[in-house]
Length: 112
Length: 269
Figure (cartoon, chains in turn orange, red):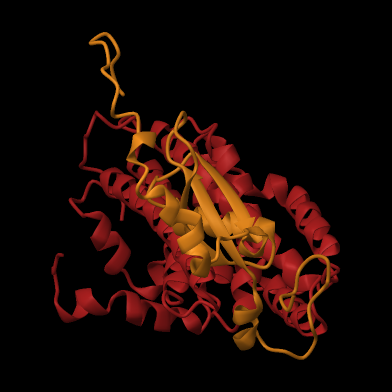
């Protein structure tokens, strides 16, 4: 990590211009109201979790969008491989009976 | 600047004499001009921050300060009672009539200076705001109550950067130390009381800033030490801003700030 951090893990002699591309990427999740879930808002660069939190506050909540923020370093996220989309997702396409649309719902049951 | 003919009884200061109103007016400007000029300095960095995230953070701080300034100027205009607007007060004064401290007009030499200036001001600003919350003046109290959360965040942001850069690489440490050493001479002015400051503090309206000088240097020193920076020992301090005697940078700031109003008088958005 290139940026001068409190832990002193910076690399000497490299300037601020190339510093930016060495800051890791963080994924930002914001809860917009109490009771709602955190939703993915976007990503940003920061040297560590503390800075990611401050940056997220400034970049994503300055228009009153949130009441809670999660930050996760992007490298900690395991993503599905688009090449595997066939085996992962296509088998579900012709199994419409897995949607609960074939049941007669009593009128008393709402919001289904 | 004093208005003796104004009898606006809706003001809590309605029973004040012309001289007292003048002092209140000057006192408000003393606080407001610090925020205006620092906001302008930070605004210069819009689109020029070291990266997108920091750029937005600095602009946010600038806008916080500008918001506070507007409230102060609106109130100052009312106190003066000469029918001026907040814009008149912000844009149409001469350099000698601006009462901001010298620290806030210092240039954005490099990011270390931007953060050092911010940090040295934020510690003071938060202490001042906390005291202003106890003011007998309802309007000033309200501005302080609203602004204190903003200023708390400014302090958190700038203190973090002081520690990061101070306790970072050899290069960042050196630049941070250079900025602190250079700006140190402008810190003492914060605690000097003008005539308006003294009268307003005695009236329970203003803040006696001289009282928290010791606490200020203690808090600043603690952060600097944590950042592995050396606390400057220089005893030579600059002053004059509060009396309208500014450094050579001020004229350039005002040239920018006042350009539109001087080119297109009375223009509005």
